[in-house]
Length: 504
Length: 104
Image (cartoon, rainbow over all chains, first blue to last red):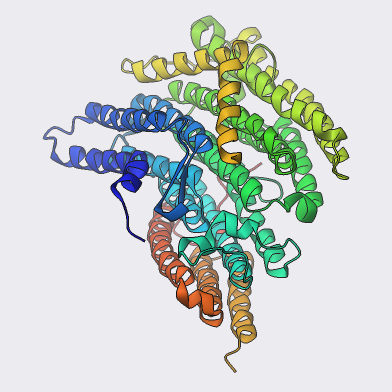
């Protein structure tokens, strides 16, 4: 299979990010007085270039490397979300990493490499590039979690995340091996003898759904991805990893890892596993319901803000899973998943960015009580946090409300569909709306602390002199959260067009 | 006795041994080794499937995947050992029961 220049052009957003990563390490080595102020601009520059190329690929669905990469609307939409979330995380990191003494070139290199893996995952057209994308995304994130290596929490979180992440990789890989076996043992499953075709999602989709290898492989594959997205009962690592990781890294994990993994799950559910509902539908229903309930109920008892948001992100994983389940049987619903992911990414990067803005060297203000009285001293920050909490809770007029609205609307609309299992969708929507109401309590608890409680002694929030990056990122995320809630129509239309390209 | 059935049985056995090791042992280094065992079990499955079915030799996707897995396993081991070492410097142990700085 010859590699054409056009293939390399389609790959170029990923290559640009990797070049930026190399440049960041080099710049750190060769600048005489370790001027770390340059590094964020290298990262942002390469992210902007990647976004430019990606945006240019909008509306022209193509595949590269014999179908290993699919640069279609879904890949571009999710890719731009990934790039934007990475750029916002880089902006948030600048003052935080300086205060924590980890403003190395490697920090930026790791973030850009993880971003390139996320892009690869959103474009994956076969199981090999999907696996590669997951690993290129995960391995740098393990390092990023541990990057403040003087804090025991950070390193401990990394050990837990790494062990469970690598364990999940094993399951995922065994699933891929069984799926490969399912394809190769079917004379008709792969139409051509091209190398990639044996592992392509289309070939997997042509295997009859009662093939035992396919069933077992799909089960293992679901366990592996369940770990990666943090779905119950594979969510054990999420609270520890989110609490221990430096706040900007937590925001990056919550946004970028989820967007990329769910985009692939959406694509795989439509292309490779059209039988998903028929074979594993009941299991998926239980997983989604348990994820929504466990995430939101456990969040109620948390006093640590990062841990609370970790459980909240488990709950949101459940909401996105509802969208994925509905769209595996009704493909046109997939656009609601894309919109939800974009809305969630903006909000979650913003809320973790706020935590990193208020952090002090070696000590993150992360208990809810340390946010008491914030409104009196930092009215802007308190207003932004209120907006993010409203969005996570799904209160209009915010991005989170529109996201939940489109996902649950699809679920309810298709509940009366022809499929015999369609009534499950209604139950999922009911559980989703019920748990959202529970969730409003713990999100409001934070708002109450900021506006109605006096500050605790010694909890002064210092304003970093060089925190312009975090300030800019907070302004952008707050504006995005509001805009997606008030004028969601253009983005909803883009997500629908993106999905139409995948389906054609 | 090199039937596909036996090879897949060996693969499943290796994988299950690895899973048992990760779940049952409390030493981080042994857990790391068990993860390697899981990945090697997967490799056996890939090679066996690619070798057994004639179409696997026409298109060596299965063989290539094994090389990819080995590269990823090496990268994971490097990062994993570095993280474990960083943790060892804090706690002077590799016992996972000592991981107690965060509790729900």
